[in-house]
Length: 565
Image 1 (cartoon, one colour):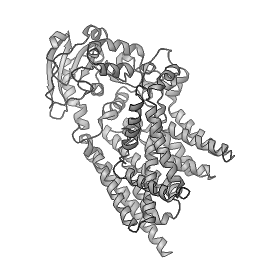
Image 2: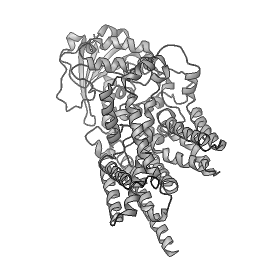
Image 3: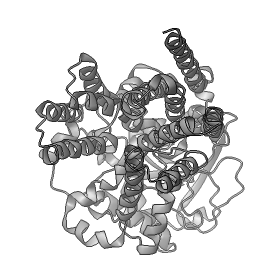
Image 4: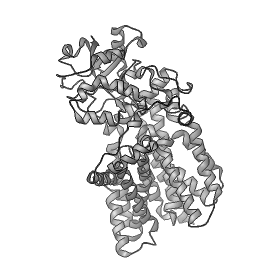
């Protein structure tokens, strides 16, 4: 009894230490505020600017199909943004941006720790947990500080908690805790980019029970349906736009050609995803977790202990399958079918790989358990491996990983853009701008009306109109041409000399010498000014007139302002 009490006390101590580590991990957002560093891709360059546009234009609770006049001449729709009931949007409505971002990080990481801790304790390392609590806590901690996609919040890292609740219900439990989890998690995660794939997987588990076990667990089915229903209510804008679209007009996603990889490229992508993961669900497992789990798998195969480690083997198979499924989603053989079935183009079913972080860290826990139980120096090795994985993750803290990228303040450069707006000295809604060498959402964040944008979905007619502006540059560069024509999510002023690099700091020595734009089309769409992060040496021949350059100590950019002649 005394030994059990000692284990409980040790477990509580380790939990407190883990929570302190997580708190330290997210503290820079509150201490540094706008001087904090963070991921640019699919974060600073898009979502964080979108939240500010929603707030500044009072669009959070705007009616269905309300146009966002500030972007793409009003062709961009409020319903393209996240619902006002999504926590990320709600936090940015309530707090200053960096405080909101800090809270989102803290909520996500603490819940991620709790979720995997509960899942491992009850369903993965369920036997003799009092002997393996160090593994449970250590693995949950490392999982909670992985470099997830920030605007997804609990879309990926919340999956363990949801699965824990669903498995509780599956085995007959009826607890208010599970009801709370299934009700609240949808407010902190997304359905389309995350939980659709988990719920689909849980639905297959329910079917397995029906077909193999002949067990019609209707309460389990209702739990799946209930959580799905909560997501659909929160995402009511998306649901209504699908059921009753504002128009039958085509969008950029109707000409979205993803499946272009040949067989060899597909095989390479399997390996890349299996080892490195996708940028939105990075697990940083390739250095410690992957080799350890594969070594343990080899031991299981050699010793033929399949039955004893059935879950371990199954998770390995599932992990490889998900990487294979993801890679083959982009295989060229899919394209003919995708062109005939619209939903295969507009919805990315390859994202089942979002389940992999939960699977990979469960494999880590099971591998450590095997080492703990079967090695002479197993316990010491487990301590060492957990510390090593923590050390591997430290460079992926945003303040470390992105220290050479702009801070929030430097990126959005509000003082510098105030100078630009004062210089132009016109009502903001009376002129339109485009950007070169910098993301359009910097101008959007500062209240300027832009023709260019990073947008998930918008009318195909607008894409075709905008394309005419950059057509001369696209004709110089086949890679840029394919990038825009086959996707088009980034309606940017692409420049052949710059390629797909559209972020140049004020320290860059790069110059543009041969810019060719369809200035007549730019003018016809209302474009009057060009904001360039680089000097355009042939501006006069292009049809642009240089006005002034703007620089600020606080800004990441050196902005050259040009007027459309």
